[in-house]
Image (cartoon, rainbow, N blue to C red):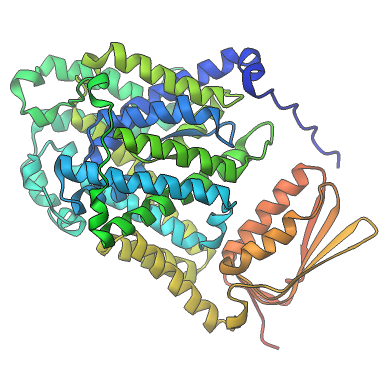
Length: 531
């Protein structure tokens, strides 16, 4: 079968800007329309001044785009970090003090991310079991929904101030009993627009980004109801002046609270890095030019962006998946699309702050609830169950511990359960962090033989051997000597196969004839059948 010819990739740098100005500016403008309201909502939900969401997006676009290692990802604040950011503000004392002390931890976390990149730890995402990562993201989605329901209903913030996530979930009936009818009306039809808009993608109206359509409907509704004079102050967004707010805001005296400070440095660096790397991997696969990002360079760029953002008061940024996908789908060619998205946000906030302050908070809550629903959608549970019951157990344990404790404990609980299950399935303890892997070459053929077990915790060693194989050869990966190949490795091997074959080679995965899959899913874990 004839292989599809690879498209000639566009030029990078200034030449790329000139050649692709129209397509990149157009894509950047569409992403700006998505990013503006979402950045405001994420900052507000994170207990940061809302304008700091825009500061983060501006830095992620204008600064980070120039030094990033990926061409098509959009850098900015992420809903997935709301839980960590809001938790840090609360644990550092809340209010302006908590915000500034949290910024100190974020600066250090940004420097840690730079160090990750310098030490070439861009493969970090591969050492975490995929079910635990998906469980973490689903838990974040549930937490976002729980925290935004009272905002959608325009309940007085004093009613849920300081309340735990479990408390907010159990208090939903009380929130409903105290809802504001007019603000809730805007929130409900904003939510309906956000959820229903994907079904209009084949119509001309559906080409308008859903968050923009929410603003087109919500702002006139708010003006017609005269929220400024008839509703309490918390019903509308207030952001203030950009120039007055952007200054040195970080406070490092939180180092005295050693345990809390270290905890949040780890969480900002770990969760932000994981989400960024997963997005870069996904967008590389969607890139029509099949370019491969430099993960380590991209981590350095994100770390620099986070350090600068935190010093000035902004949120932590990542390569954000929804905005990056919109960037690709709207014809972006180079990193300049990310630059334009940041430039358009800067221009808009400088000249149109009064328009931004007409946005009802219930409309922003609707956008964030939609993000939460995507992260914790029932199909995530169903898909995980299809991969295997054990994967669902890891997924659920991660969710429960994240909701009742925090993200670090949730991820740790998922990893520990995964390791226990591996021991039960006969994985030798000696192979938990090292899989004996032998690579041989004969007559244009590379043979990769893996021994004992191929699992999430030892995949980095396997991946290192695979990446040393030059492009364009026939590669056979033989797994017959493994007792177990887990789901994370099965998925990563298929990613390797896809990428290697895109560059003109061929990959076969063999030796699983005597292994029993734990489910019918093609990427399910495989256990060596007992003789």
